[in-house]
Image (cartoon, rainbow, N blue to C red; front, side):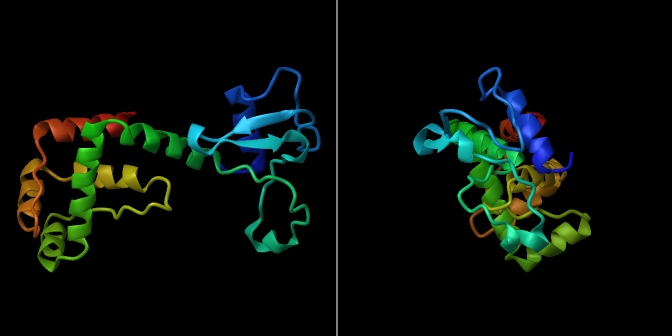
Amino acid sequence: QEKSGENIKNQLLKSGDFSPGEKFENQEIPGEIRRFGNPDHVQDVELNKFQVINVDYDDVDDFEDSTATRLSCFAHSLQLCVRDGLKNASYTSRVLGKCQSLAKSSHKSSKIADLLEEIDKHINKMNITRWNSEYLLIKSILSIEKDDLESIAKLMENPVKFSTNDLIILQEIVDI
């Protein structure tokens, strides 16, 4: 679905963060102060200064109302929630660490790159600023047969081993 101000507004309204009767009129929400953000970074926002805007990247400098609080990308906010949840589960952190280590090695080692080319696969890089990079990394690793994955891992400077349980956890993360 397109990431437009209208779609984000609709998702926000569906999420139930606003009291019944509050409406977006001219993309502004009149009323009281609400709390937004995760518990560690909660901030008060005056809703009369809160606007949903659809930014056209060519005209970013032309946006005049700099006092309005920008609504972050809904998908990115959702990903941050998922990432926080995954960090709290020690077994997922351990498996994601293996994935990140494998990805890092695969982009530094010509031997691993050659093996990946032979099997016509690639391993996505993890990038903290790209909201879905963890998902793409996991999907790319799951697309590799277990025997090939073991062969790739053996070529690493500090080899990692993906157990059957690790692969099940990765599949569950993708399914969520």
